[in-house]
Amino acid sequence: MPKSTIANKLPRSAEQNLHVVGEQIRLARLRRDLSIAQIAERASCSELTVMRVEKGAPTVAIGIYVRVLFALGLDASILFIAKDDELGRTLQDLDLKHRQRASKK
Image (cartoon, rainbow, N blue to C red):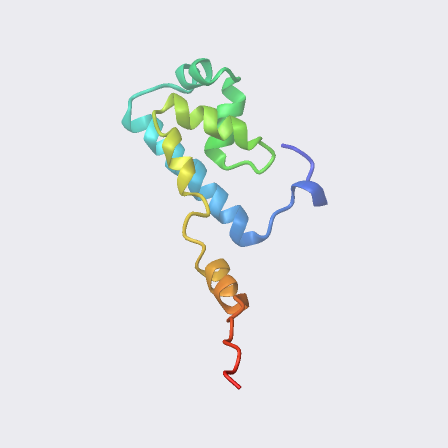
């Protein structure tokens, strides 16, 4: 197991979310009746790396996650990350400048 450092330590909620993503990837693989070795071969990575993806390891590069999703035929799902940014849109709307008309005087 990798040594825990500030660089790979995530907030608890983010760590839990990554764990859920890994579990969803594992379930997708099992539903397709594919082995870890098959996914590793298709994703051009090691079996250990696929196992770390399925555990939601924060030290695995996002590109590896995308390659594993591609091997499962789920790569388009990456487009849903941060798609609905309600807070950001609200903040953007609050910061909009409202133009005022010049007076007719």
